[in-house]
Image (tube, rainbow, N blue to C red):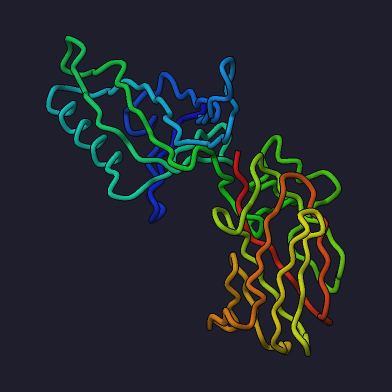
Amino acid sequence: MSTIIFQKLDGTIFDLDQLGFRVKKFDVPTTNYNYNYQQVGQYGALMTSVQAQQLVIPLTLNVLAVDSNDLFLQRMKLNRMLQSHESFYVYDTANKEIRWKVYAEPVSVSRDNSFWRASNVQINLDCPTGYAESSYTTQEFDKSTGKGIGLGMGLFRNEWQYTFTNQNDFEFLNAGIIKLTAEEHPVKIEFQGTASNGITLTNQTTGQSFQYKNALTANDKLTIEGVMPTVNGTQNYDAGNHGFLDFATGVNKLHLDGASNFTIKFDTRFYY
């Protein structure tokens, strides 16, 4: 039987069903868009921008206990699970491949004319990003076991991969529904190989390029996140061309110049 899980950032798991909280509804809305308009003339308006806002996810549950004292303890337990000094994750075990990063709004737990039950407790979970994210990154996916690869991600088609060795031309599939931008959702890129004059990585789909100008040896590890290149743990912004790479939804065609005997890895989550 599926149940709802709360997972804290330190990895602590709360299984609501096992803890005596019977979930009645967990109905995640579709994306919450904000539309901005500019009045044009006398008879109409022009839409100037569309933005995805925070999402409010309603969760309804019954709180079960064995007596009035236990109901008080259950209420304390619920408060502990919902404390939101920091965000936490929520997901349905029926689809563990996606999760929402949320904060909890205040909750009232009222007895249902009984010492052992509180019915229809309404919890609103605020998801600031507005989207679910894949529970595993592209470097954690395991096609042999299906770990992290849920329905609709399309990662089984054409044997998509996110680690490439000695390939100058390759394809990156963004399986989510939004772009992965260097500003908001940067893809972590790790390069290790020989490049006497640095490397240039181009996303031919978006027309963007990132160049690292310094020489690299086989013992160096270059990491790119957003506009910042890091070599062996040391940031070196001046060695980059101050460019950045975004990844469109669907297939992105990439080309790498300047390297030999290399491996390049792409590590990211997808958003739904």
